[in-house]
Image (cartoon, one colour):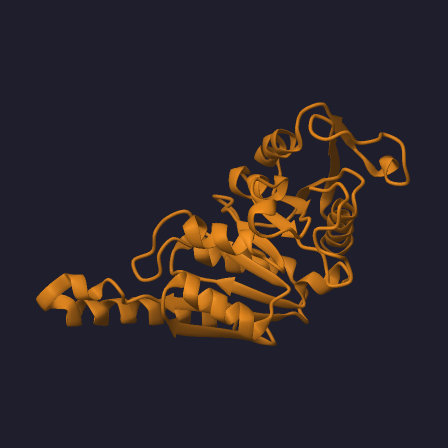
Length: 271
């Protein structure tokens, strides 16, 4: 998979909060105009029955709010070719998993830390599970308050592994296409990495700390952190650098998943 192919098919979970719309705006900022962009808003009515005698009115309110969110998304996508906005009944996790299976995205974009009335927290348990099980790249979007987000300042983690080199290739593509200022960080506080190789001349900064600390600290001053994923699943992926950076960073994080031409979980070092 080439760097730009990561943005071929973009799926965005929009939950009606500012964070969900931020995920959409950031995905659109990253994806080329030819990308296919599909958004989905999940209408979760599972808790309506608990409202008792007022359940019908409450359900109507949730349906109205969800439809308004979908309409707002449609307005944002109006000038974008190959884009669609869907409203689907079900829990956020169920709906997103179904859309992932049907749409086969190359990138999933999620945003938000707060609970939406009609969807639930996308950056809570749902986002954690989707990131953990991902066979696609994932953008976890965090807002840049006061101005429209752009990936003007990008930092990428590099350790010489195949996975980090894929992440670097994606970061390079963003720099070339969007004019991003790119910083390449190699953290020496984790596993042993060599300072000599075909990739070391690309390193902008060598950091003595573990990679999670090095990247999360720099995330305070950048717009986007790019990290590679080793493609592991289940227990083997617990506590991976990419997952910890995704959840702890102050900026948005793009977790680049290896393409089908790269063996998943191969025994070589990687973020």
